Amino acid sequence: MKVGIFGVSGAGKSTLFRALAGGAGDAAPKGPSTGICTIRVPDSRVDRLAEIFHPKKTTHVSITFEDIGTKEDELLPPDTLAKIKGVEVLAIVLRGFSDDFHPPPPEGLDPVREFRAIESELTLSDYLIAQKRIERMTKEARRDIEWTSLQKAVASLEREVPLRRVEFSAEETRVLSGFRFVSQLPFLIVLNVGEGDLSAGTYPELDAVAKDRGIPLLRLSAKIEEEISQLSPPEQIDFLKEMGVEESVRDRLVRGAFDAMDFICFLTVGEDEVRAWNIKRGTAALGAAGKIHSDLEKGFIRAEVIQCEDFLRCGTMAKAKAEGKLRLEGKEYVVRDGDIFHVRFNI
Ligand SMILES: Nc1nc2c(ncn2[C@@H]2O[C@H](COP(=O)(O)OP(=O)(O)O)[C@@H](O)[C@H]2O)c(=O)[nH]1
Ligand SMILES: [Mg+2]
Image (spheres, rainbow, N blue to C red):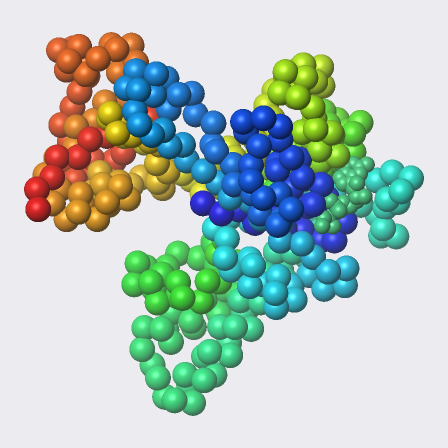
C-alpha cells in the first residue's frame, strides 16, 4: 500500500516525512533522501506467531510513504498530479501552527478552508480529464459503457462531489479505473498543530468536517515528531510518555491509512513463512486466497480458519482443533481481522 503525503506548501509535509523516515535502529526505513520510505506495519500477532513456528521468513505488511511535495504557487502541476495517481491513499497535511519564523498567512490559519481548497482542486482536475475524454468520444460517436460512466462521473464532479462519494457499479468502476481519478482516493487528514496545541482541541470545525465525511483525522505536531524520531528507541518511549502521546507517529499514520482504506489483516503461518496480509474489510475467503496466490483462488476447496488469539491461547493447532476453534469455511466466508487462514486447494 502506498500513501502520498500531500498538502499546500509549508503545511509540514517534509517535516512529517522526516519524522516517519528518520528512525533509528531496526525500524529505520530505507531511502529517506528520495522522499519515499517503506515502513513495516508493527503487529505483535505476527511476532508471537513467529516465535511459535520459527519460520524461515517473517513478513509484516508494509506501507510506503511518499512526500509528494508542492510548488509555492501551484497545487497540482502535472508532475504532482502524476505522483498522486501513483498512490492508494492521500494523507492531507493541513497547517495549524504558526511561530515567529512562520507567521500565519494574511487571511489567518484556516485548516478547513485549506482542506476544502485541496479537495476542490482534486475534483476539478478529475472533471477536466473526464470532460475532455467525453468530448473526444462524442466526436467519435461512441456511446458505450465508458461514455455513460464518464457522464455519471462528470454529473457529480460538476457539483463538486468527489468521486469517492459516488456509487459506481463494478462494471463502471472497471472502465473508470484506468483514469486513476484522484477525487476517488481515500483521504486521511493530518492536522499539524503548534507544539502547545497538541491537546488543546483547536479547530473543532475540522473535526466536524472529517466526521461528516468519514475521514480519519490525526492531530500532531510534525516538528515534535521529527525531534522524537531523532532520539534512540528507549528515549523515544520516555519522551512520548512525558508528552502524553500514546503512540508513535508511525503507528498512528499506519493505523490512519488502514482506517482510510478500510483494511484488515489476516495471517498465514507455516515453517516457511509467517505472514500478515492486508485486504479490504468485507473480502470473502476466495478473494483472500487470490491475494496469496492466483492458484489458491482457482483451485479453492475450503479454508481452515482460526482466530489468532484463540490459536495463541491453545498454543498448537492440534489443541485448537480439539477445542473446536479451527473451522472449515467456504469461499463466501467473510474474512475477519486476525484470522489465521489456510487454503485447501486443488488444481
Ligand atoms: N512551529 C512549527 N513549525 C513547523 C511544524 N511543522 C513544520 N514546521 C516548519 O514549517 C516549515 C515548513 O515545513 P515543511 O515540512 O518544509 O513544509 P512542506 O512545504 O509542506 O514540506 C519548516 O520550516 C518547518 O520546520 C510544526 O509542527 N510546528
Ligand atoms: Mg516539502
